[in-house]
Amino acid sequence: MSQIKLGLGLYRHMLTDENFAFAKQCGCTHLVIHLADYYSNQIVTATDDKTNYGQAKALEPIWQADSMIALQKKAQSYGLTIYAIENFSPADWYDVLLDGPKREAQMEHLKEIIRNAGKAGIRSFGYNFSLAGVWGHQKERSGRGGAYGTCFDASRIKLDAPIPNGEIWNMTYRSNEQGVLAPITSAELWARLRRFLEEILPVAEESGVELALHPDDPPLEGLRGMPRLVYQPELYQNVIDISSSNANKLEFCMGSIQEMTHGNIYDAISQYAGQNRISYIHFRNVKGKVPKYQEVFVDDGDIDMPKALALLEQYGFDGVIIPDHTPEITCGAPWHAGMAYALGYMRAVLQMLDKQLS
Image (tube, rainbow, N blue to C red; front, side, top):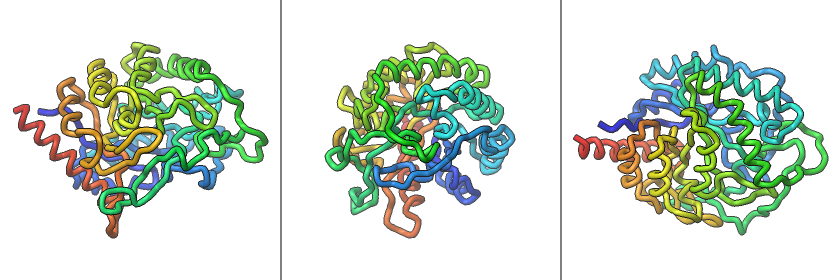
């Protein structure tokens, strides 16, 4: 029997009884959740309004152990398990990313968050070590049949638009700042990641939590005057080589990897699943590569999704796959319909794998 688990990703404002029931009804056994408020609008553009988070001095209640345990119990009441949390809030770690004066205090906050996740039985914590973040995407009716989806066309944006001081990941953590962030080298960004992992991985191991790095999205070598870490599949190996800790893993976004210009998704699965380094997977399909691509329905892109799942099975992957985001279907509940379509497809392929294995 396949050990691959079917899951659904839910943003903080979506952690409701209705959506927990929806996940279960679609055949999910697990959830990947977001607790950072800003992820209710994940795809942002250069013209989006900024959100002011202020300067966090203590953990928000949502990040505390009692809150995470309560969420886990709520999920369990629907026959679900919260497998992962995705992303820290910019307000909690901007100086970790920037190597600023509050770095030490913010690292202690992050360690507390990881410990609390472990207390709640949450296996994985996804993160994206990036200064520019997810930026520059467009939303259009570019999907099959005019479905509303996400696309990226570098010719339509100013790729070198500087990042204002007081902003990280497209979010304002301190207002009334002047000037822009000074550019740094790729070596400096890698050094910051190494320092972060060297400090937090021992805590993650003790807590039974995996740290899972998302690749860059869009996967460009540089964006907004800043370097990127994982914009080609082979660069994930550099992350793994930082530490042999079992807690040092990958948030394997198939769409982002397919958008890259080197290699192919199947070799990447073999390389990283073969090392048991994939924590969980964003199971989404795309057409095209940087500098121009579009996110499409799971059965309508450049990736042979059944082949990818069969490879994951071959290498013994036992984590969670989620649709991540998918085009919306034109109806009264566009997001739910799009997710139900993707989950139905994924469940069917998993059942086919089970029959082949048996």
